Image (cartoon, rainbow, N blue to C red; front, side, top):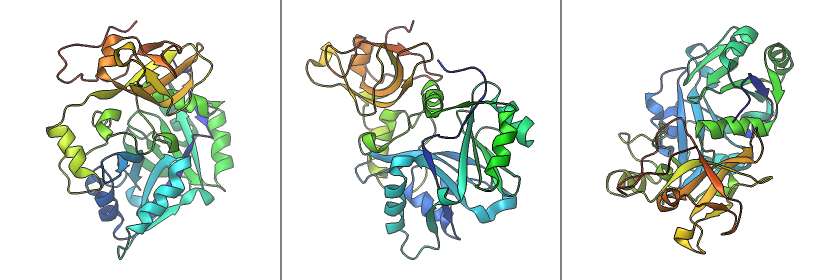
Length: 327
């Protein structure tokens, strides 16, 4: 569960990368899993950046700046602890392309707005409320982008930030990174961090269900593996949400089930304190263990997990069985 009222989060755990230049769209299109070239000004999408073996090195959301501020290029949001390594890795492939990839947090502030009424809070504070997957410009180059999961990201200069913060404070309560992560978990949107980088094929993290993969675009790193999994493979694991009566857990903590004995059968991707206690988490788990409904956290005799509902359906391909009912 997450707080129902709109909240403003100054510590999202995300870094803003910016790609600019005549070749920015083509370059990102050739590196990321999403169809960047199809984006009209002001539109955005989820993306992943994969290894040649098709595993997610990082993921996030990006958008093309609105038409009136095309000079701002593309904004990419990525986990703080991966931002530098991903920026440097992308930069090695620029070669002669007319594009620059920079960490924009030295001069830009990122503010998150989430919860019921967050669009109203943005409208009341700034006069803007973009539709999901869209960005609008306002206030001397600031941008508001509504993620597909309906959280709102505000990007503005450091100089403009205090004024925007004061305006938001009249319409949304302050909250920390734990709350921001909780909204992502409730939406079923995994966010890869350093602890889980290079572990998951995108489909096992439900990235195909969330629209973070284009299966009609050209090549990008890991594309052959991702496509083969989509059309010829049989997924044995998927991302689900869980709750555990424990004080905390961390990304990359392993999960266990009697169906797999002493061998781990899942991995925590994201976790946050539950509003009513315990911990809520997203984890990539073997489908057989989800069906067995006996998952434990951290050890075979660790805290038991209860599966939580996601706002989208997760298929259990080819098993002839369904996960147990929730609740």
